[in-house]
Image: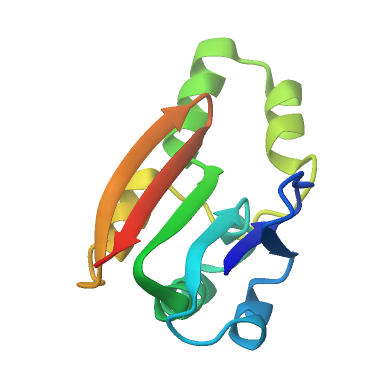
Length: 138
């Protein structure tokens, strides 16, 4: 099973799409998911809830399954602001579709994910103000 958690519209019907990460525990059995995508989801949670969601996602991944996390990186965001200096555009980029409850960086997420011995980092990509991290369950 492939699960997409986020607000974007997917054109890929192979994914089950949900908006609330808390629903993951109800739609998938433990070790059932081949892919779980958290797209812009973690920034909507406080840091304690981020840990709960990641615990659940790791539990739902099967061996070889992929956990993909896409979100806004606070360090990249501040860098862009210092470079461009347009606070109006920055606000549109950050607050256009959601309420932010935590500032994240890819380093913070990598540090959290490193605590899961079952995960191995597959890919880290930084683009504009977002990070894209992929981890594989071993």
